[in-house]
Image (cartoon, rainbow, N blue to C red; front, side):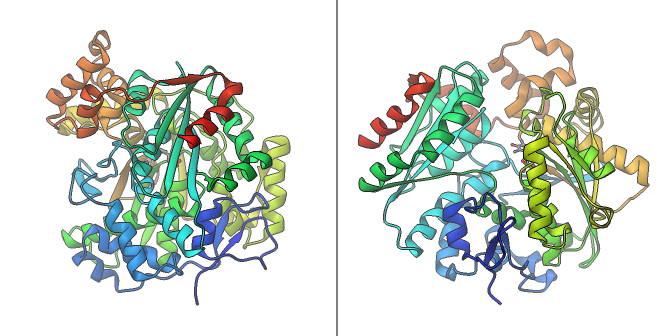
Length: 496
Ligand SMILES: *Cc1c(COP(=O)(O)O)cnc(C)c1O
């Protein structure tokens, strides 16, 4: 049967194709699109060991993207996973101490979002073509730093698209700002706003919701879309690297085909770990998904008690991409453990909006056996970086360190010695200050750029191209505007 998509909040009769779901992003009832069934792996598990990354990706994704032809999907994959990545492996699996680190940070912005955002533009433009959409797709994004750059890098110079990124001027790190302001590509536009991230996000939402503007721009051949992490066009490509990691362990003789392994995933919005869960539904032998949180430990509390509660202090940590109180992709899991019950899911999500919390039933909680949740404090995270470096010389970033610290707790608690993959989501170069001061507090005296050179010496890992570029590339974006000028700035850019 061909996989279609339906909303987690809809009546279930309304289904759309994969390409329609990618174009729409969010279902019109506010729910998230989920596949009507999870496709099974299309070949024997053992076969994957002989495939390169792109081939694995094709075989994993094709079942989900059923209305894409072989040629269309392969073309998207070829354009995404090319020499923008600094390793031919695309996702490198590195043994360190008692685990395998799946390095998802070899792409353009040295963090895991590149895995999905390098292919999303191509999935989106292909979806537009398939649905006879001839308008140019305009991506609008508000960013607190990381996603913006990954989206810019993904969409830069992709024909048929334009991308506009708003960020809070003064509200992102110097390196993050420089990364965005040096972004090449005639179709890219970066704007600092005189306001905070919330204002940037509200401004973007207002533009999305402005029907008059929508009509005006349609008349000029433009339509808006979002690169948001709830788009299935971001979720599906992520399923591939779970299968890939498993197949590398088989290939290297670390496991026998069919053996179960664990994955530890540093989690924020729950997109990455959910992709892993989908891989398991496809038939990948997985024992546990260890969900690792930082001090914003909503998910740890949820797995422990069955109660999701976002009413708490928001803590700024050294793993900022996981500083999240509403994990939006969790809705897809809730829907599933509710037995695909739209009404139950809707009730819980409405409670989340109204009261900032919800509690699942005992029966639903029983369905969470695939997961184990825990969290790492700032101190534990920093210690994980220091200990790994002292023991093996391997330097990990802060997000990965949260996962490593949680893995240690998991092992102590469960005595489970199943082979384990730690999903490594960012290069240490991206969070050099927190990483280097974890190794030695003395480094805090150095400048950001000095720290990059020090990190190279300490880690013996060459500075990635993304870092070289920040140092040398010219600033090409300099637009700054007031919050209430965002709409006119968008129009002006589109008129160019
Ligand atoms: C986005 C991000 C995460 C969290 O991933 P989710 O899919 O949101 O759970 C973890 N680490 C890094 C470096 C990220 O950029």
